[in-house]
Length: 130
Image (cartoon, rainbow, N blue to C red):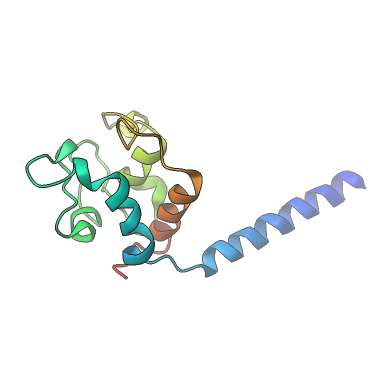
């Protein structure tokens, strides 16, 4: 009986978390771009585009529905964070999906879990240019 109650509580709390996450709209301009400006743009400017990825002057058009130059995946596949090389590079070196390189950002501490979750939710919500 206690196991069943624990299982029901776990299922209910996961469902409530998923509902809260889905109802929080993430803005590219207000939520994602500040993360990119702080941690990513300095290595992905024209002329120094690490990994063949430029994030300036229009980061959104350079990452959404654009093939990665390091992996067989798109940089951002709207609706699919786990199939988005850009997201994978924030949580893994990329080698797990046929890519190369290192965990991003290089020579800095990894993004904190809240920042990674913001990017994940934005992609999951279809990676809108909002």
